[in-house]
Every structure is written in structure tokens, then in C-alpha cells.
Amino acid sequence: MQRATRALLDADSDAAQAVILGHEDITALTGHAEESAFVLLALQARVAGDLRAVVSAIHIAAEVRRMGALAVHVAEIAHRRHPSHAVPDEVSPYFEEMGSRAVELGSNARLVLMSPDPRRAAQIRQDDDEIDELHGRLRAVLMDRRWAHSVAAAVDVALLGRFYERYADHAALIARCIIFQATGHHDLQAIGERRHAQPAIQGR
Amino acid sequence: MQRATRALLDADSDAAQAVILGHEDITALTGHAEESAFVLLALQARVAGDLRAVVSAIHIAAEVRRMGALAVHVAEIAHRRHPSHAVPDEVSPYFEEMGSRAVELGSNARLVLMSPDPRRAAQIRQDDDEIDELHGRLRAVLMDRRWAHSVAAAVDVALLGRFYERYADHAALIARCIIFQATGHHDLQAIGERRHAQPAIQGR
Image (cartoon, rainbow over all chains, first blue to last red; front, top):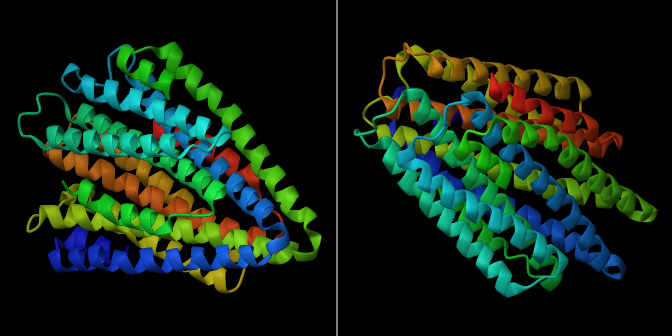
């Protein structure tokens, strides 16, 4: 973060690239730490299943809490702009689509929680990718010089886009957590790759 | 999220308020789920200390990974804007201050990890509050009609502010996790209140 801040304030491209490349190390290290923790849990073989369920439950509660906070962030922007619309008509369809995908993700995550279903989990992954894609296109609209609305509206739209993207990511993490619990395969590598891939989407 | 999206797209203030008020229930429910999970862990009395350490380690790894991703997001914006500065001079001091507080938070979280020290944990809470405060003031600058820079710059500044705010929050969560591990007091109520208080800051 120190180097990222320097890159930001000094417009230092080398520093920025060093941060981006260095992220692979963090992903590898945190993945390794989690892996070791899971191995330690597995060593408690007698109660391994229960423990895994308990750890999943703790994770899921934290993800749900964050999803709730993100929905509140969306509602607050709507509330602050009332009676005006926070979102210009031009970008409304993005939020229609992100909103309905996000809700679908949330309810699929809930269904997977009640009955782990790899096919539904795959649907979640697909919806999450779709929201990332929409988010990327929304960012492009904002960055376009032809943006005809206020700066305040652009700021709101940028943050709203981010909130939906995060919401989707948390729902996807819940699904992964449950699939891990059901199959014992925690797919950390895939999570690590996604986390690492995310900045590229961000950078579009 | 469904209701929040409706509030957003229909400029429906009642729906927005219902979401904001309903957040207390989510906070209470997720807190309750975590509480129960911790109780279940504690029932494994023979190995409770080890398990608590393992669960903390899993949490901390996830938080560190997210902090890394946020630093990358900052670096990417710096990189994309190079050789220009992503941040107009006018708001540079905010990022100087948020950047140095964020780095301090990160290194204090690391120190608390090596030796749990409630005084240092209190410092972390204070730095986190300070960053929330700076973030609120930065949002006010962006929303001011006198903003003289481009829409793209405003979007970058809004997202950057959010990234620093999130980074600080993850560092603070690590500290809480460690203090829980050291003291057995997981301070969920305080986290719940903070989570619930956050939107008010956001709404400034």
C-alpha cells in the first residue's frame, strides 16, 4: 500500500507495476496460510467434518453481513438523491441487469446453502462473471468524455457499480465455501486466480 | 439488494429507508450465527485454544489477501493515468494522509499479530476512525459543485477513497481477530455496531 500510494501521488508507473506484480506473492502466501490451517483442521480427524462446517458457518456469516452492508450502501445513495434518480437513464439498464443478477446470485447462494448442488454453483460463477463484465462496461461509459451528467452522478454510479460487483463476489464466495464443505475441495487455487484476475477487469 | 435496487431505479425513498433499517436484523442474525459457531468451537474444550488460533489464521489470511487486492487497485489507477497524476493536487493531501494512516494500520496489525497488545489495538481503532473521517471529507469535496476537474478524475478519486477506507477496515478486522484470539473476547457487538454505523459515514 505504501508503494501503491507513492505510485499514485508521484505518478510513478514502475512503482505501480511492482505493486501489481507483487500481488502474486500475497495471493500465494495467503493461499498457503489457509491451506496449512485447513490441514491443521483436518488433523483433528475425529471431528473434522463438524469443524469444517463450523468454519464455513463463520465465513458465511461474515460474507452475509458484508452483502447486507453493500445493499445498505446502494439504498443510502438512492435515499440521498430522492426525489431525483441517483442513476441517469443512460446507465439505468446496467443497474437493472446487475441488480437482477445480484439478487439471483444471492438466492442461488441460499439454495446451495440448503442443498449443495455443483450445477447451481456453476451458475453462480457464471452470474458473477457476467456482473464483472457489466461492471467493466459501466466503467468504460463513465470514463467516456461524452458523459453528459454531473460529476456527483458519475461518482455515485462508480461507487454503485463497485457495490454490486462486491456483492456478487461475496455471494460467489459463499457458494465456494459451501461446495468446499460438501466436497472437501476448497478450490483455493481458483479463488487465488480469480482474485489475481480481478485487477485486470478493474483495469479495463 | 432487490429492494435497494428498486429504491435506486425508482427513486423510492421509503424502500431505501426500509433497507437501511432492515440492516440491523442482518447484523443481529449474522452476529448470532457467529456466536453459535464460536460456542460450538468452544465445546471442543480440549483443543479450543488451537481451534481458535486456526480459525483466526483463516480469517487473517482472507483479510490480508483483500488488503493486497486493494493496494493493487490503487496501483492500477496510478498506472492507467501515467504519466499524468491520477489525483488532482487539490485532494492530494487527503491521499497523503490516508496512505500514511493505512500503512501505519497495516504495520500495527502485523505487530499485534506477533505480540497482542491492547494499546496498539486501540491505536488501530483510532487510525481506522481517522481514515473514515478523511474519507467522509473527501466525499464532500467530490460532491461540491466547485469540483474543477474531469468526471474521470472524480470517479478515480471516489474509488480510491473507497479502496483506502476498505484497506483500513480489513487491517482493523485483523487486529480484532487477534485480540479475540488472545483474550477470548471476540467483540462481535462492537463490530456489528461499527458495520451498522458505517452507512451513516457513507451517507454524509
